[in-house]
Image 1 (cartoon, rainbow, N blue to C red):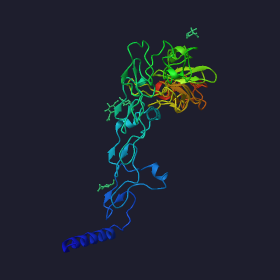
Image 2: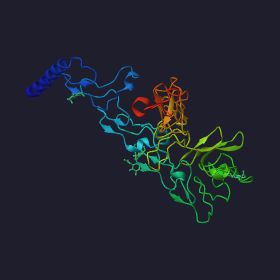
Image 3: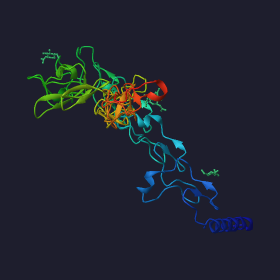
Image 4: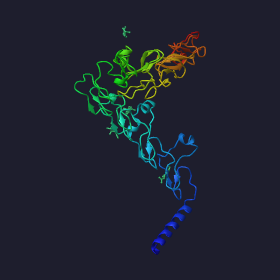
Amino acid sequence: MNESLINRILIVVLYITLFEVETNATCNFGVWGGSCQYNCSSTCYYGNECSSNGGKCGCEQLHGNCYGCAKNYFGDVCNKACNQNCSLSDQCVLSGLACGCERQLGYCNSCPKTLWGNYCDKSCSIRCINFECDRASSQCTSGCTKGYYGSDCSSTCSTSCLYGCDQQTAACFPSYCVNCNGGLPKCDQSNRKCLNGCIDGFYGPSCDKTCSVVTNNTLCTKCQALVSVGITVCTECQPGYHYDGVIGNCKTCSTGCKTNNTNIAKCFPNTGNCRFGCSAGWSGPRCDSFTCSLSNCESCVANQPTVCERCQTGWHLDSGQCVRCSDNCATLNSCDKTSGTCTGGCKTGWYGNKCKDSCITNCNQCDAMV
Ligand SMILES: *[C@@H]1O[C@H](CO)[C@@H](O)[C@H](O)[C@H]1NC(C)=O
Ligand SMILES: *[C@@H]1O[C@H](CO)[C@@H](O)[C@H](O)[C@H]1NC(C)=O
Ligand SMILES: *[C@@H]1O[C@H](CO)[C@@H](O)[C@H](O)[C@H]1NC(C)=O
Ligand SMILES: *[C@@H]1O[C@H](CO)[C@@H](O)[C@H](O)[C@H]1NC(C)=O
């Protein structure tokens, strides 16, 4: 080693020592740096999440690396956004939550069934049934569309196969059992029955019926075969409807669900929970519980939280709101709930239905008894 290299090493060692001494100060939560002069990234993990993380939040003092990232961010200082496709999986969309990605490289935590790759950035082959494939290998998970075979359905069945061919063996399908899960090996050809259920979207013993056919319900888009009892039930309905297990049918989204004026259904198809929250007066996950919250109102006009139908005692209707019975009614708080007419007449010196007119100013002679 020559002298200048040794000198340089010494300088580096000295620098590190000084730097460490300088950073010994303990920074407050949320800031970092030798004199705590920098704010932690705004995408470091904050909020309620901190307390559930043993109070560990903010960022590390020396480099500002976040202890954890806010949902949908990654990288040391959480300044990189996860690929947008990370949150498109059914599970994320239905829960309304961002599913986020892995901290170091940003690999998506979950992918929609129709995309693959670490970043869910590639589409499955259009030859995959339902466009579904394995996230890691891109192999079609629900079989191939008619006429194709192979793990990624890239090969074409022999032209002599009229009903398509088996994904694994390329053997021609007979006219029945085309939709058997597991292909030909799972098809009982003598009874024309599928032995291992159906590929997605098909139902019945021979897997030749769609969900709406097998449930005799055109609104039903997803079904579940209850193998042990031998029936198939609806589990999901067309957009704008949700499946109600109690009535066993598809039901429209609650009128209390807010819309955001797009053609996106206002409730989730499987739970009926409202996607954009509730309109005024409505509450509950499905916004199906209505509360009349107008003051002094006994009951609102059906489903209208701002229009009163019947007022409480001592109040009467006026353009859908409740106003107090006149102070000039002979008996306190006694007026007709609809018209406001004082039911026990007026106090001395007042007249008219609501006893609003004064004898002194408006008339020369007044019947004190009315
Ligand atoms: C840090 O955040 C505070 C409060 O949000 C702000 O007033 C200040 O300017 C920020 N400092 C830097 C260096 O960004
Ligand atoms: C998201 O997935 C689609 C395929 O559906 C793909 O075309 C697109 O490039 C992906 N977006 C990103 C940002 O990777
Ligand atoms: C199917 O539903 C229709 C109308 O909802 C009904 O008229 C018909 O009887 C049903 N068919 C069967 C086989 O249940
Ligand atoms: C409606 O909601 C969807 C999904 O949350 C959103 O992408 C869209 O921007 C919203 N549109 C309006 C007009 O608010």
